Every structure is written in structure tokens, then in C-alpha cells.
Length: 274
View 1 (cartoon, helix red, strand yellow):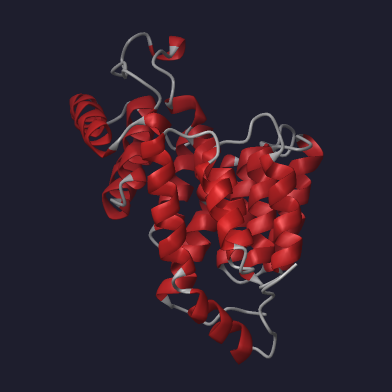
View 2 (cartoon, helix red, strand yellow):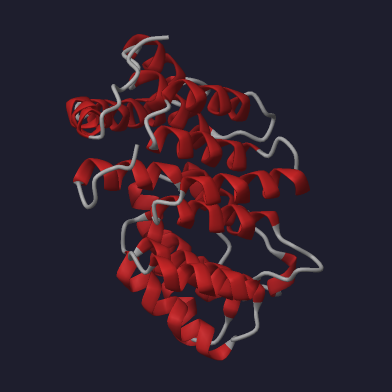
């Protein structure tokens, strides 16, 4: 089915579809030390993914100050924009990346981050073009290919999106973030069982993180298996992180009637059981 345009429920699902991709994009920014930056990036006390809201705000302030000292620095700019996006400050993140891209028009990492910032603010076609410029045919980057897939999904082109995900998997087989995006692509078209199959495969990989498992929990919960979904959402997390995941999952599943109405509108019943 094709989801109806511009509903809050659809927008939240679309955010889930790219969450694993964002995690992959942040991988280079979550360490406390980066030898490539010779100390120009403020060292953080812990990985970004494990920070609570207060720690994220502190880290954002520190990186913001570093960015202001040198608006042209690509590493500071990308890191700062990523933190802003994690807190929902998408318009500001886009403004940062626009500034950084002016000074670094041929930097592959900058173009990739710029494209993701454009996508987060709904500039989907521009994002696709920007990420395409970041790609090099002789050395294709699987993260960029997967990013293109996520944008194509948001443009309502699931067949093209899935082809891009499979291209990425040809380069890096069993990469959990790509498998997760592929699963979420099927979730977006209400094929919940196929979505669960790919998301289970993603969650079983050694490199899978909590966001991949959260996507699996969503696919399971949308099929009516709520207890199982909550167990998945709590897996391998601290009590505080687990409670946050479950609260998010419940907020999504509370809109399940919206999901079923969207499916019925397109003449396809939403799958509710295995």
C-alpha cells in the first residue's frame, strides 16, 4: 500500500525507518577520541548513544562553541549537526551543514551529512541529489547507498529503495543498519511479517544496537504481540534506557488504530498476528 501523505503517525514511522541509518552515520562521532582531528573536537565523556538528555545538551553546547570558533571545520560541523538532529533541532542542523558545505564543497562526509540534514527537514529530492554527489562510482560507500534508500522510501518509491538497500548489502553483507532499513521499508507498506523477518535478521547480527531492536519491537507490536514487543525493547539496556524505549514503543503502538485505518483505506488489511 501507499501510506496517505502528511499524517503524524506516518511521520513517526518514517523517522523509525531512518533511525538505524542515522546510527551508522553517527558511528564516527561517538568515540571519545579522534586521531584525525588533532584535538580540535572536544573530547566527550562517553559515547553519544549512551548519554541522557542533560548530557546531550552539555555535549551540544561544547561542540557548538567549537563550531563557532571555526565555522569551516568539517569535523566539528558534522558532529555538531548530528547532535542537533538527535535532539530534534533539524532546522538548525541544516543551517550548520549549509555553512560547512560552502567551505567544504567536495568533502564526501560533509556532503553526506548535508544530505541527511536536508532529508530531516523534508527537502527529500535535494537530499537525494546531495548524497548522490557525495558518492563515487569507483569506491561506492554502503552508508550513502543505504541513505539513498531511506530517502527513496520517504519519497514513496519502495521498490527503488529496496534495490538500493540490496546494493548496500552486496558491499557489506548482513550489515544490521541496512537490514533494519530494509525491514522498515516493508513495514511502511504494511507487510509486517516480511518486515519482522528482516528486522530479526538485523537484530541477530553482532553489530546491532538498541535502535535496531526498537524497530523490531515496533514491527512485533504492530502485529498485536505487545508483551513480546516490550521484552525486545528492554533487551540489553539499563533500566532507565529500557523504560524510555518502552515508553516510546507504547506511544507508537497507541496509534495502532491509525495504522489499521491507513491500511484499510488502501484496501489492504494490516497484519495483526503471525
